[in-house]
Length: 224
Image (cartoon, rainbow, N blue to C red; front, side):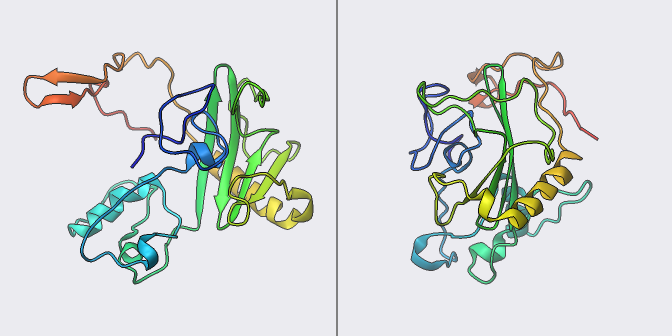
């Protein structure tokens, strides 16, 4: 699977092929939808394409199900997608908290996907190019703010997010606005310049494992 969405002129030049609007540093589909490939003799979905909704956090419970392990402890954010990948069940995931994007000093979002609907809070999903740049908020905005501007798309019919249909679907806006409020209750912001973590060094030549992506935190940090 890709590390992030497609490249943009402003934020990143790397990423998977970009067939959507925006890229890294945005909550547009180009920054939140990534290409992935999975292969195996028991997979069974039409046209070799998985049409269900899936999030990166779903891999943990899915791989655990494949090997017969049962995760315990805190409730996982991910859901088991094994039945869907085997073609026996529809995807158990109907929504994704897209979260926030940050570029320089501006935050964009939050955004949420529910079935074919996607709601973005604010006036923009993030920078795309120098000619199409709208500033976001100086800090992550509280999701579901009743006074905020909202942009709604039907990403099945409009995957490039060209037409805002929020005025024509007030009930959908209300439903997704409520979902954003619920996600905001458990949202944990990233820690910038965490003093417990050394700067990320990328690929290093480890004496025990050879060339590896170096972990940059010396201990596991658990957020309550």
